[in-house]
Image 1 (cartoon, rainbow, N blue to C red):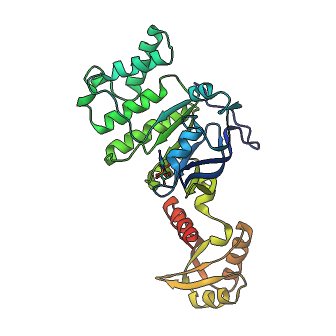
Image 2: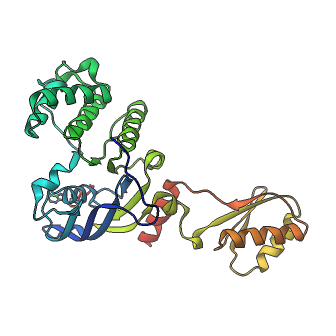
Image 3: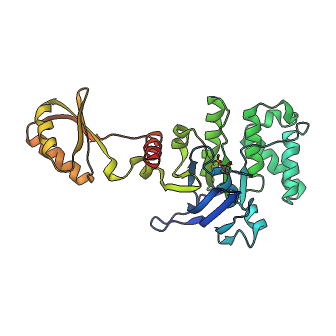
Length: 321
Ligand code: ADP
């Protein structure tokens, strides 16, 4: 499998949703979602429990019919050609039951057959995937004897059996210990490196941050933010918190900053000054030059780095507002 060629400026979108809605009784589980997934991207889908993540995933892969709106998958309309759309996806649902007496090899054989893959190719594909998800040692043992981590890896192999270009994983890491989660992360990175487009829902933001390129924040069935992960984490310019450490002249810096338009929330933080300022890199460079010219001996200066967790928390706080 070759990774897709990306044209730097125009995003190559593989999944598009417009004004997607799904209600359960008087609950709007998905309430007017517009979404684009770039081909080859790995998107984190995050939000509180009940935000509509599972429902949205199922709508996007044609497992649920929308009440309103449109989904296009690689140019195919999900409402017009649901079977075709479903074949473009591999899906790991949040709850998945395998028949306990079947072996992983039999499970994969069964699904290969369901996708009408000829038996000899299906067998080869199953063996290849069992190795990929590191289940070759238990390939012929009953599923009932597998650990939760192994079952999740079998679920991933099952999602990949027909070599779909898009893979959706609904809370794949829930209930797994750190070693098993790390193993899953490595698998997701390999799946992504093979050029597939991934959408992963999870509450473990520190881990999503390690392998996701994009993120969608969902609350009460609506998209609160969707962007490249790095941009979401950096936050809007207005939200930048700057930190200045000086070995001499901290008072001078404080005086200069307190007079400067746009600076707010100026406070001492241990040996540093922290303040909020909306500025471009050029403006930050000009401010640093000013501080140096005023005789402040600057040891460190820059925007504080935020984590995905920080970004999510400040987004949640704003939403709660
Ligand atoms: P999440 O995956 O973010 O936890 P869900 O998509 O599971 O959210 O659920 C979104 C909302 O829709 C919740 O209020 C949930 O109770 C409701 N919901 C989801 N599926 C069903 C269903 N099959 N029947 C009734 N209500 C549902």
